[in-house]
Every structure is written in C-alpha cells, then in structure tokens.
Length: 306
Image 1 (cartoon, rainbow, N blue to C red):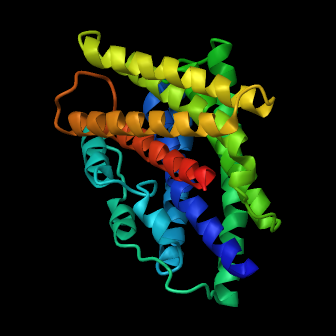
Image 2 (cartoon, helix red, strand yellow):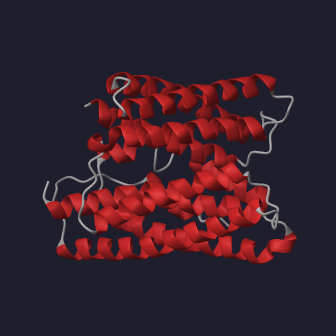
C-alpha cells in the first residue's frame, strides 16, 4: 500500500473509532453536572455536537476507503449502538443524531489501495481539526478533574472515570499527531505499551460497572469485580514484559482470552440494560461504549499475534 493510502486509511479508521468515543465522553460529562455548573453542561454539549459534526464528515469520507477488518471489528458500531442511542436519548432528553450510526452501519470497504490527492488533502484537514478539538476536550476534562479533586465541583462521574477518559483522549491526540506528521502507526512494534494501556482500561471498565450496579445485583457485581482483578494482573504482566521479566507472547495470549470474556460480558450487560433486566444507574450508551472499546482492543491483540 502506498504512503498516501496508509495515511488516509489509518487516519479514517482511527477517527471512526475514537471520535465516537470522544463524543460520548462529552455526553457522559454533560449528564454528570449539577445545575450550579450549567456552563460546564453547555460546554460539554458543545464539544459533543462538534464531534458529531466532524464524525459525520469522517463517515462520508470513509465509505469505500477503509478496511473490511475495521468494519467487521465491532469497534465502529455494534448491533446495539443504534438502540442504545435511542434509549439514552429517551432517558435524558439529549438529542443524539442517530443518522450517523445508520451511515456507519452501511459503510463498505475499499476494493483497492488507490486514493485521490483530493481525499488526502481532505483527511489532512480533518486531522488538523481533530487535533484542535481533542486538545480542547483534554483541557476541559483536566479543569473538571482539578475542580472535583479540590472539592470545588460535584459531578456524578467518578474522579477515576475523568482520569480514564483523559488518558484515552491523550492517546487519540498522540496517534493523530503521529499520522499528521506522516509517522505511521506500527501497532505490532508498540504492542506491550498498548497492552498495558488497554488492560488498564478494561480493568477500570469492570470497576466502573461494579460501582454503578444496584447493590442487589450481587452476581453481576462479583463478575465485574473479578474482571477488575484479572485485568489489574494483566496490566502488571504487560509492564513486567517491558522489563523482560515476563514473556511477551504469554501476556498477549492471556490478554486476548480475558478480553474475549469481558467483551462477552459487556455485550450481555448492554443487552440486559436495553431490555431493562439489570438494576443499575448505567446509561445504556455507556454499556455499548465499553463494548466497542473491548472490540477495538481485540482487533489490536489479533494484530499483535501475527
């Protein structure tokens, strides 16, 4: 594949996954503020709408350009995404543009590696706008976290959740900057760093789910708690492998199996939330959000195995 095709495909696939994640981070922040901090509610909503606008442009540019692997991974949308958006819109009154999801459900893959100069220039401009938008969102999250930790603000979002979504935004920003400077992403070379990062993310997802379940959901609580412990160990294993004190191949294998399991748990939980069969304070879109991240990590892990 020529360098322009690599640049375009890696950029668009990165945005299709992460830009939806960012717009949902903005949505989750928006829902968490009290009336006292209405300005923050409005600012989060503005970020959400800006990511919506840019994501739609990315989707329109991506049809017939991205890989079959990305489309089939479940990291862009899942079978639950559209219903999770509709349910979350109904529960919150926040307008969620489901037309973007419908477009994503109908994306087609590239038939060859040819890209036009015009498409390269459009993707370059999208990357530039994304860098500006992500940077602003990171600053916004940092201000919220500082205020929460100094007891100047109350939000229903855990401080760890705010740190968690900041880490994801910083990773996204770093990857876009790398692509924009034509330093292409070599996932395999960065495998252990990625495994340490995403194992920690999976551990925290489990802990958030555990903390948002109703106390009566003891069985689900215990399953989530066990996943949290398992991924804490896998995070440690990945860090040990970087120091050559643990074989990298076994970490990848163990992470792959554990991520398949937590993916299945998240899928069942999302379905349970949509069917109103789980007592919790989990907005349905959060379930689907964490499922897509597990699907993304699975795609990375399968690349590491090659």
